[in-house]
Image 1: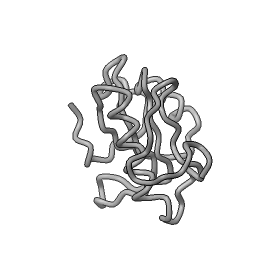
Image 2: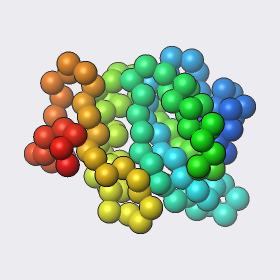
Image 3: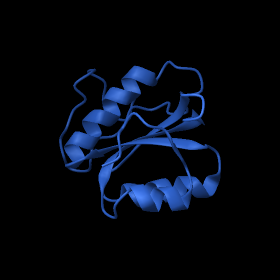
Image 4: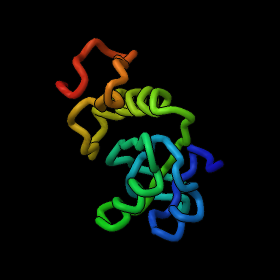
Length: 121
């Protein structure tokens, strides 16, 4: 598995090499990278079905240069990590996510870090 602390260059070749088909998880997109050991996140995302497909779609936009990934076993785990990252980073300069992450469909999950209604913040 890929360490979640490493920033990887966002290219289709790197994504296909590192992210197995059907893997679930959360990711951070941003700028900087391994050369100077800095990473400036700009986007927090999640996939409950195919992390590889989500990252490949972002690669096509060419708006960011690096990504970090954390694999998860379940959509619940992915949602909880996405909430954690969102709350930790939402006030950082450059973060594009303005809305709270939505819970997986029909899960009934609530964010453990706030009492906001999902998607209303």
